[in-house]
Length: 307
Image 1 (cartoon, rainbow, N blue to C red):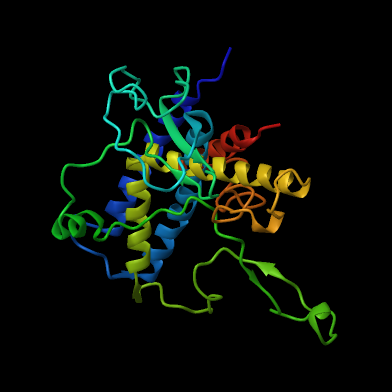
Image 2 (cartoon, rainbow, N blue to C red; image 1 turned 60 degrees about the vertical axis):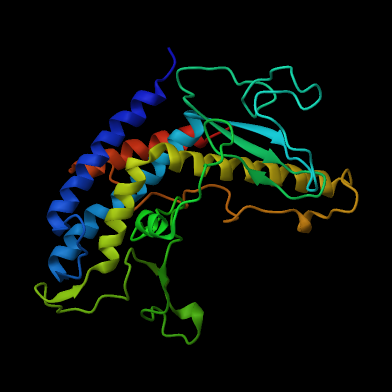
């Protein structure tokens, strides 16, 4: 029996949406208003739920990108002057109809592949590009005005699809009495600020604008899960294409191109997950976000595994 990835994504998405709704209520974020200050104790409580929710959302996006998105590569056209093409007709004859899809071959439709992303391959001049996801290229009749663009992109934080690197607090205390780096320990901590000082007042008001943007970015990413999955699927396709070109260039099969000169996607990482377990992961979770994080982490590693 085949595993239903679409149902797994929908179930965990519903759980994360409920958790984000509780974060909005807990932080007191209202529509059209920004959060400026929060008590230190309440901010710490929100972070204890927000950080695992962000890591779970990234793994949910990875699941959708690997199992629910089909990436089709097509050859990019060379730059230069070209004759204008009439939609729906063949440029060679002018009257023979052609399919409206940009793909040379239409990918097979299946239940677990509802979204198709078109990725342009490197053209003769070596400049890659991307095409819109889900259908043919379309040009709007009129460009949006400055007011429409401002209203569309104003205060819309972007969600990071890659886990942040682990942070370390070096040289905290000496364990051997020796001078130099060999006499100290490297301790890992999961904090967004500096190392916390003891005796802080939990009722003291602290800046909460950053945490407000993170909550809204998480909510926007979950509302547009297909778009986030298409972003990650395009990056994964570019990464695999760059690795393949580096191998061909190293073998001398591409003249005039060295492995160091291959165009690499940004960020240059092998996968969106950082090593180890995500913060908030528990073998026996006691909270709802802990259960969602554990399930999303296990399913995302299975979905990303291509062995």
